[in-house]
Amino acid sequence: MQISFSAAALPKTGAILLPVFDDRKPTAAFAAVDKASGGAVARAMKAAAFEGKTGKILDIVSPGDLSNPFVFLIGAGAKKDFDALAAQNLGGAGAARALATREKSAVFALDGFSGGKISGGALAARVAHGARLKCYRFDKYRTKEEKADKPTLTKIAINTPAKDAKSEYAPLGKLGDGVFLTRDLVSEPANILYPEEFAKRCKKLVDLGVKVKVLGEAEMKKLGMGSLLGVGQGSVRESKLVAMEWMGGKKTDAPVAIVGKGVTFDTGGISLKPAPGMEDMKWDMGGAGAVTGAMAAIAGRKAKANVVGIVGLVENMPDGNAQRPGDVVKSMSGQTIEVLNTDAEGRLVLADALWWAQETYKAKTVIDLATLTGAIIVSLAHEFGGMFTKDDKLAKKLDAAGAASGDKLWRMPLTKNHDEMIKSDIADMQNIGGKGGGSSTAAAFLGRFIKDDVSWAHLDIAGMAWNTKDKPTCPKGGSGYGVALLDEFVRKNFE
Picture 1: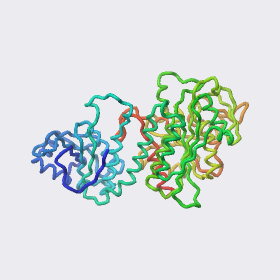
Picture 2 (picture 1 turned 60 degrees about the vertical axis):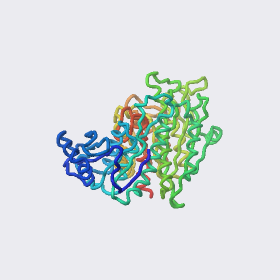
Picture 3 (picture 1 turned 90 degrees about the vertical axis):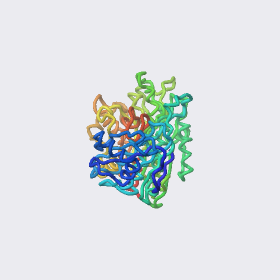
Picture 4 (picture 1 turned 45 degrees about the vertical axis):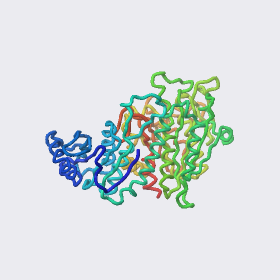
């Protein structure tokens, strides 16, 4: 989608998108469009009793003397509450409506439109960002599609007098690139995106100035990564570990490490999952996808921070050589693990990836993201990512980043009792606890691979990596959750 900014007069072709607050006071743009229509826009709003409520849209077709085929009034809600996320959602709502037409272009008329918490170029940039995010499509494998089903919209213009709109949008454009990369990765089928191919796509970040390292199975075996390697031993696809380094800060600053679970397909292994819904397990690499997209966004905007993204990439398959329930593996940390359930595999991958991150980069702040447990969906549905940490200061920083980015988090319990639940009779720990508290015992397991002087949080994003329905700035499918969260977290705390 081509995004542009202009202070010039409104175009005479394409759809016009006019935001309206619930006080229904006309903006300069509204007044200009209404005058050009011979008053038809204001009459339509009055006749329809349009109140400007958030998410509501009024279609006005061929209004009066205007040559534009459509004017859409987009409800913006209460002016005093209008903030950056509201502006993004408004952009998404407008773009969704324009996409449903056969128009090739649309323009947001923002002259005089100012919210209580955001205005000017920042507001215009957020509207543009939300519109672009909503226009994402993953259609590379569609060879036949009805003409009426394929959007014709290719250009979205932001009509605003704010001179800084384009510069305000620049970092958001890079953030959007990262979100789209994550959505692409999460949407790919597992026969296309397996560990080696995922690693190849990570290498493309070199073009942004990212240094990329890839470890194969032989190298991981030498390092003693028995926990990660055990998960992938039943697959013909070789497991990989990838590190993406962006060192834009001071040389003396330790990097923040973001670590992602990258199970490119999860059958459950010998502890085989039920067939219904197993196709969804192509997105069990959502954590790794988020980390990769975040690194693209951070490097794309040339962040003045040191960040390393690490992804453990495996395929969990049932094979004659697959890991068995009851097996004991030795992790890189030296700790042993009794594998009671081969479907609790993501934590085994992260165990070695987390330890390697700390050993290799001496990171003092570590955040991991993983589509780790179904239990978190039971707790939080598809509304929040679950946050587990014993560090109250880190929790506040992540919670603030989630609120600002729209990638919402909810803190979950992580106690000594949860750690007690994963004690093993024959090894240092077992990879599952009892029937209850599955998300917390999984977090407790990961906590055993974090050094005492490291600030760490685990984010369980199982309910957030994939949308089962359309959302304001994202169509159904891969959500890109975590990219904006991590970018905001780095920007606020490490730059």
